[in-house]
Image (spheres, rainbow, N blue to C red):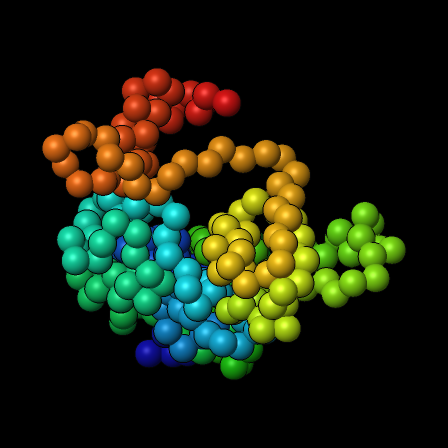
Length: 252
């Protein structure tokens, strides 16, 4: 078999994180040949934690903000022992179990960072950093939307600020030199909630600035008096689906 034949697939998926693994699984179900190109040495994407500040991942203490029953894939339930709000290492094990269950491992190439993707006629040509070239009919990009830190505020509203500025992508755990300091956190995403949870008990004052507003819900609540506290998003998701089906939009 020639090199061109060896590297041709119906579909190339770039990234073997949560979305990339799902894309790979569903392509196989459609009887398409597929390869997932992953730049790191394992699956998981953001959930494959590393202390390397140059790689964007979850933080040391990250847990899911949505419950296991809302987070899990519809055709692969999370085990009961994973708990209501799994830690990042539990999620990584879950994703690896997903690869086991649907036999995805043979279709994933690790240490294959993509350097360039171009289209020649109807065929995609994907060149990797290690020199390998793959071709396909279709290309699925599953690299996430938060790989490159957005530092635009440092050039606009913060350009005259003289204190230390850190981007959340650099933070893996609480930085001891922030102990007892006044800290402002700008942004209302998942990572922001991780930083708040880990920093709030160690700093003198934490100001959380959320530019576009946010709805907050407790993770757990006692819904029925004769039962243990339950994950609130289970009940709210069912109610939201009844009020506003996904075909329309969420109220508010």
